[in-house]
Length: 549
Image 1 (cartoon, rainbow, N blue to C red):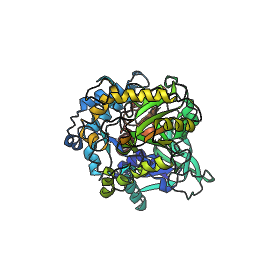
Image 2 (spheres, one colour; image 1 turned 135 degrees about the horizontal axis):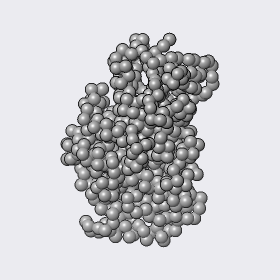
Image 3 (cartoon, rainbow, N blue to C red; image 1 turned 30 degrees about the vertical axis):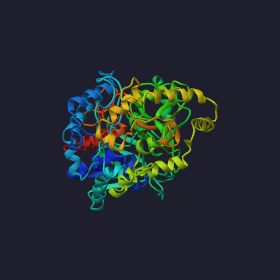
Image 4 (cartoon, rainbow, N blue to C red; image 1 turned 90 degrees about the vertical axis):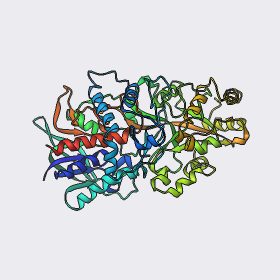
């Protein structure tokens, strides 16, 4: 059977493209190597953050945003410097995406039944000059229902279309190659894999039970990035970020392996910006893992003190939640692959959130009753579980005992109690006045000028060594793999380009596999909330283009 379009990968980008094609009555085949219950892919596990500009939610909280301010932030963050080559199409996609995020994205999401949490988050705060990295205002809109909430309307539409014969969905079909004839991609070949009765996110088997070949007028690759392929992450690691970490935790399921990137490249597709990637510095080893080496990211407020492995305090802009890649570089240039937060119970209960749908059951399950429990004393239940059971937490009533516990956890004697004490005392003295020269204390007070942060995100400034603020807590932070910022270079129709910059007839890409558009829409760094949105936007663009073919 010949199809109009074959989509490789049933993650959010592939589902979005499929939904556009269903509306245009195209005959579509959706293939995925994972079981059917993995539909939605990596997006299902996300916190559900979306980058939006000048929304009703922002305006209700007194936030003044604009497309001009967002574009200023995007350019200051991306730092595009390969304009005539690898960044050419990424820049074009960035302009188009900011237009989308400031325009029809909000109403389009609403038309899908997607609702947003009323408090807008302030991710990647920057902490530099106005034209530098970071969000000038809060723009991180959390989907009501987190990752499952954003996947649901697209997955439901595809599954209903499959039941009624409008689309063919074949899980456990692994692509091994593209069919290339006379310079055009005309189909796919691969292996049918044995059924795998696993829970979503667990590693499935690769037992082959058959072959397949399908042909189509167009093939859309929407298979994700390389975040679970640590060998490939290390191979592409840029020297500017310091030495490759010896140990990293895995922020994505094992199926995020990057194999379709190699297959597309083998058939003429050009991969650009291989050295650009987005990995987090606040990774925890999951005490209750779903996949191998499962890591969870802390979404921190600004108040924890951040130390390197030798007990030196990081300076601006390397405060919690301000500049991910700057902090990653600072950590790795110490020669170690981990760092430390030191904080109080008061900071933990107000400022620690954990990324991921499963770590936020109240928002994921859309339970207002459970959300109201967040205002009660003590940390949210998932955070408390990590505090009680996590391998990276140390809790003590005295700083001396805390530092001893930190050294014991690290298996060395790198941290000196007196040195740590003096650094914390110096910071605590800055709390006595409402004004200060300490940049982090300034940042805390600035954050609390935003109502959303004051209500639920940022603890009042207080002295860490004052016992009335609860026991002291130290958290060992690991590097956590996550996003691929480079990928297959595509034009604004989503057509994959070859080394000469020409479209490969019949080959398209959407989502992370194309760097969320053009082979690198983010440049070097992300403003956050742009990954899920990038899947939606690229999938929508490709789907719309192919609907008219």
